Amino acid sequence: MSASLPPGATIGIVGGGQLGRMSAMAAARLGYRCHILTPDPESPASQVAAATTLGFYDDLKTLRRFAAAVDVITFEFENVSAAGLDLLASLKPVHPSPAVLRMSQDRASEKGFINGAGLPTANWMPVDTREELAKAANLLGLPAVLKTTRLGYDGRGQATLRTPADLDAAWEKLAPKPLILEAFVDFACEISVIVARGAYGNVVAFDPVENRHVNHILNLTLAPAQTTQNILDAATGIATELAGATNLVGLLAVEMFVDRDGRVLVNEIAPRPHNSGHWTIEACPVSQFEMHIRAIAGLPLPPATRHADAVMKNLIGPDDLALWPEILATPGLIPHHYGKAEARPGRKMGHVTRLFPRGSLPGPFAIEAALGVLGRGRLGGSAP
Ligand code: AMP
Image 1 (cartoon, rainbow, N blue to C red):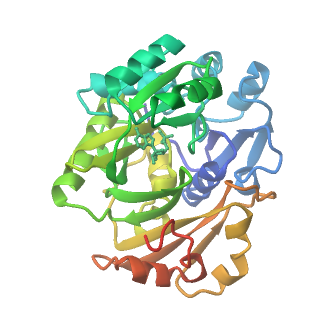
Image 2 (cartoon, rainbow, N blue to C red):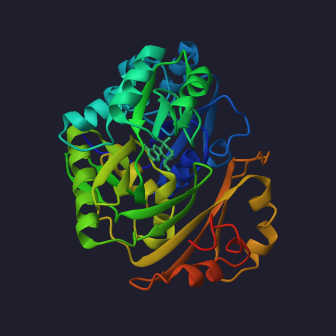
């Protein structure tokens, strides 16, 4: 990348969800205008952006119109077709690069890339036929997780196989899509690290955090992760190596399992801001969103320091959103509403962050109490 993007320039964001919304808010503070590409006229990102091109991600005419209106292009939605990515890259600078996006769109190429960089994942095998599924289940053992290679998120496109009797139903549910079978990890915890890589190859890493899921959807993030220094260092090392190996400009979120023996295994990577980094908005001088905008705009990347400990709780579906008035009335809860009109079950509607002085993240019961109405029975078990 040559010179940095001057204030007043326009950043194009493909995708109109909450990640685009919070990126646009960070970009505005640096003097940039954001232009959103989305099929949704009421998208969360459009509501806070300077402009929107309405249209579908794979419509080449729409992509051409969008590219003409912006100075640089980035993504909060990665599943644009290969032809669409190539077209965008032929018209304007695109960060992260189409090569990184393509790699991360497909679980098989993603895991192949991670293993090729010498980094560990759960054992896995590609599965294209029912016979290959039987063979993979034999080799990897059960339990195992069958996953579609593309378009899976929040547990969609997955089936857990516990006994050989589960194979038929899982195959019926997910075939004929390309699949992988992955050994089940009996994890001690799930952690993630968000790294940013600048235009000149410098990498900064936010502290590793711990993620708790309910029904495969992220529910709670604890910053920092409550684990050993060795595991924290291993996770940061893996994320930093991956950022270098991808050569990307922008953010890379790396989700990892810590198994019962303390080994750190990469689950998946995403070249964009990530739900497990929302706490950085309040707990860090430079949030993940500002770091992403800085990287793609060719601005300096300051250290990803953290001045507070934090807990982030997602607001999911109509039940959590119904508590909005109580959330606003609870001292210490920092509320974020994504502006989505319809609160469908399982949909991420907003989040709250609760800060604690650095080094004083309390134990489970105090966290539950600190989240007030959101803590009571909503943390996936009796306590986090
Ligand atoms: P994914 O879509 O791969 O991020 O999976 C969503 C969630 O399913 C993960 O965050 C884990 O909680 C769980 N999961 C996915 N793969 C595995 C695995 N191989 N072993 C155990 N749990 C898994």
